[in-house]
Image (cartoon, rainbow, N blue to C red; front, side, top):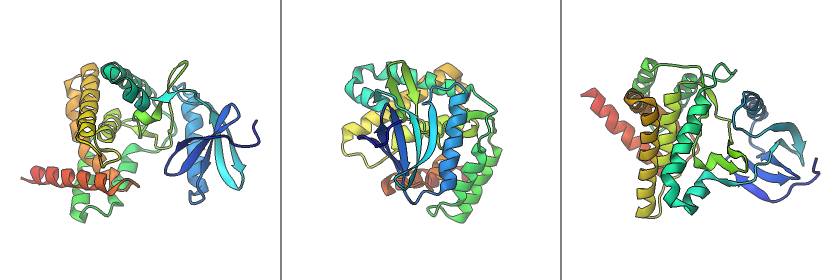
Amino acid sequence: MADSIGRLIGKGNTADVFEYGDRAIKVFHDWVQPYYIEQEWKISCSIYDSGQAAPKVYDLIEFEGKTAIVFERIIGNSLKVQLMKNPLRLFKMLEMMTKLHAEVHRVSGLPLASQKFKLRHDIQHTDMLLDEDKRELVNLLKELPKGNQLCHGDFHPDNILIGDNGPVIIDWNDATSGNPLADVARTFLLLRYGGLPEKTSLQTIFRRLLSAYYLRFYIKEHGKESGEWIRKWLLPVAAARLSENVSIDEKRVLQKIIRTQLEILRR
C-alpha cells in the first residue's frame, strides 16, 4: 500500500479523490460527519459484494488526520468525457447507459436506507417550498409504489467510468432500496438540469437531447407504462433535489416546475 497520495483525480462536495499507488483514495473533508463516512464505506462494500459493476473497496483509514476510503482505481474516462469526445456515438452510449442502469435495478434485498423515507425527509427539509406544497408532495409520494430494488441515487455520466473491462459505476453513497422508476426519474432530472447554469444554447440543446433519448431508450426497453410512472415520480424527486447542495440556478428552475405542476394538479 502507498504511504503518500498522488495526483488529484476527482473532486466532490464531500471529498477529494487521489491516486494512491495502484489504488484510489477518497479523502473526506473535515466537516463530513464520521457516521456518514462509515455509512458510505458499508454501502460501498455491500454494493461490490452484490456483484455490481463497482470498484472494489479495500480499507477505511485515517490519512494525514482525515478519514478516507481506499478503493480499486479504475483507469479510464468518464462516460461524460466519452460523450464529449465522440458525439456521433451519443445514441449508442446512451443505450449502454440505460442497460447498465437496468442491471443495477436487478439487485434487491440489500441492507440500504428506504428510498421513500429519504425522499420524504429531503422534501420536508427544503426551504424553497411552502409548507402546504411540502404536505401535498409528501401525500403524492405516499401514493407511489415502493420497491426493494437497488437504486443508485446519483446515476449520471460523470459517475460511470469506462475502464479496460467495461463500464464501472462509482459514488454509491446515495444508494437506497426502492423503486427503480424513481431512480430513472432522478437521472432524467440530473441529465436535463443538474449543474445549471448552462453557458451556451448549444449546451441546452445537448442536454435536452441527452435527457430525452435516455428516457426514450429506457421506455423502449421497459414499456410505455414505465414512462407514465416515471412522470409521476418526477415531481417528488425534483422537490427532494431542492434540499441538496446544488446551484441556486438549478434550484430555481426546479422550484418553478414544481409550483407550476402543483397548480395544474389543484385545478
